[in-house]
Each structure stands twice: as C-alpha cells, then as structure tokens.
Image (cartoon, rainbow, N blue to C red; front, side, top):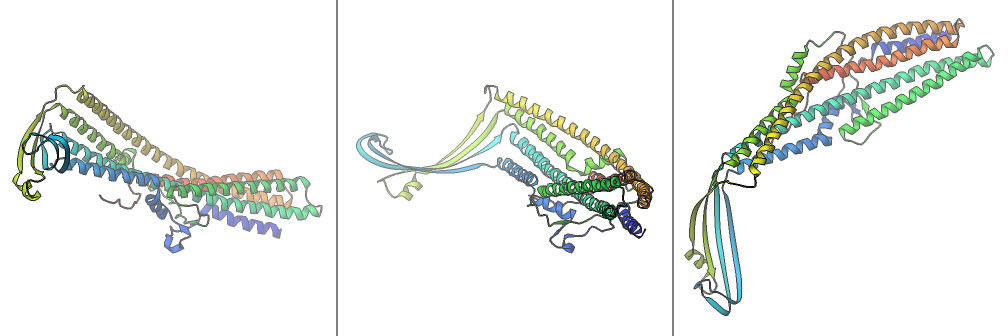
Length: 455
C-alpha cells in the first residue's frame, strides 16, 4: 500500500504538469546565455541568415538600380574620342587631300560629342514611373518574404517546443510503467504475481520506450527544421525558451471581414500585387510610346593633328570645329516589333491583374481559415483538458485497484493508454492554440519584425 501511495503521488505530480503547463515567461537570450534560443532571436537570425530573405533583399537592390538608371536616361550623354594613325606607302595627304607615293604620314583626331533626346513619345517618363512602381512592389515583396519567414520560424519553433514537451511527457509516462514493472518483478520473483499481468506490463514498458524514442526523433527533426530556417549549423546543445501559459479567456474580437481588411492594409502581399499591376500599366504605355516619332539633338567639338605641321597642342587649338544637329526619327515599318511589344505588354498587364485578384481571394480565404482554426484549436484544447482530467481520475482508480489485485493488467493498461493518448493530444493542442493565435496576430500585423534597410 505504501508503494501504491508513492505511485499515486508521483502520478499526481505528472498530472498537474500536464493540466497546468509550465508557467514560464518568455525569457530573453541574454538571460539564459548563448545556449538558449528565444522565438524573437530565431526570427532575427532567420531574417539575417536565411537565403530566401537575402535573395529577396538582393532583388530589391537590383530594382533600385534599375530605377536610378531609368532616371539617368533623361540626362545627355557625353563622349570623348582620341585617335592616331600611321600610313605607309601610297595614301592621301590629310592636309592637301592629294595622293602621295612611298611616304609615311602620321595624323590624329580628337572629338567630344553629346546627344540629348528631346522627345520620344514620353517613353522614358513612362519607363521611370514603371520602374518606380516595380521598385515599390519589390520592396513589398521583400516585406512579404520577411513576414512569411517570421511565420515559418514561429511555426517551426512552436513545433519544436511541442516535440520537446512530448519527449518530457513520454519519459514521465514511461517512468510510471517502469515503476509498475519493478513492483511486478518483485512480486513475480516471489510467485505472488499473475504471469500474464507481469508480461503485459513488460510489453507496455517496451512500447513506452519506443514511444519515447519516436518522440526524441521527432524533436531532433523539429530542431533541424528550425536550424534550416535560420541557416545555421545544427547545435543539439541549444535550449529553447518556453512561452507563457495560454490565456484563459478569448483574445480575438475580429470578424472575418475586419481581419481581411486589416491584413490587406498592413501586410505586403496585396500592396505588392497592386504595385505590380501599376507597373504593368505603365509598361504598356511605354511600349505604345514607340509608335511616336522621336527627336534628338547632338552637338560636338572636333580637331585634328598632322605630324610635321607644328606643335601638337597648337594644331588642336587651330583646327577646332563645332557642330550642332537635330535628328527626327519617324517609325514606319520595323518588322512589326512595336506592335508585338505592345501585345506582350497587354499580356503582362492581364497577368498582373489576375495575380492581384488571386492574391485578394487567397488572403480572404486564409484569414477566414485562420479564425476558424483558432476557434477550433481553443475548443479542442478545452475539451482535451476535461478529457485528461477524467482519464487521470479513471487511471488513478484503476492503478489503486490493480495494485490491490482487484483488476487485471488488461483493464489497467486500457486506462493507462487512454490517459497517455489524451495527454499527448493535450500537449499538441496546447501548442496548436499558440500557433493559431500567432497566425491571427500575423494577419493583424502584430508580428514584430526588425525594420528593413532603406536604399
């Protein structure tokens, strides 16, 4: 009876841990030292190290360069050219323009030229606006990539925490069975235990050890997945900081329409699609600009040098010439290139419009599903709390009766397995609630992220 009382006290402690959870605050990395990883630190590392986020950042930088170049295309160009030549044999005298035989002449020329587009059907201005919208869209795409990465890290971190708690629970439940096996072994050796009950308990203990091993493997897989997201080598010594306990009252007051509108206003996914649509609209305008004539202006300075006719610098000064000209280019037939470019631009615009509409639909569906999942997770957790409480009491009674010899091992193990399964489901449901709540927070724009660099 003393042994049964000890078992009851031990299981009571296990039950209290399962039902109450671990009441810990979110502890920062500095408080634990370098061997502890918080969710906030994991998100920060992923935003700094993850390849997808870095590639999105590089795309933004490239688009910023494209925008600068579109603006710089309005500026005139300026080019200088220097040349020097040697002629041997029969050639033209550069000064008299007469043919000479069997002579060697040396001459050179210098030019400085500039040109400026005066009118091109507003193509360059449309291109600037197009690149500006593309830059904004790329910025928002980077923001969206960061938001998605933060959400993925949150999901991986919570899954790792759940796996860790499942390991701890599996170890505790295996310890309960081990105690029973130890007790039954003593009775069996004395001939006071039913052989069937004894071997049933040993089989159950082996099953509990297998469950513990599976739980440890799942924990390792969850940790590896987390380290893949933060793009760092796997370190089994790293510990994860726990969350605060779940709230006991509902925290969400958003309707489906309110959550969708908030997500559309605060997240990058919809704004990005809208800017890509604007970019395609001005791309079409830029393509149509090629139907118009273009007018450009050119100006320049030129000079020359002939060996033997005086000093180099003096000749350059004396031979300086100036020019100014205008060029009007009228497109008549260019193998229908402009027409085909316009047709492609129309298709790009249609694709951007379809993408924007699809993103709106997907976000509306995702926000509705997020609220539904959160309500379902809360309900499941509350139901499992009641289930574990009832199964815990049932198992306590079964354990007392089994220790007293009133029931056999089958009835005892049935009660234990019910409690084990319900307890495992409760651990998973607890973290599922955490995850579903954080997904809703993400759509509400309350997922704190470090500020992006400006360009």
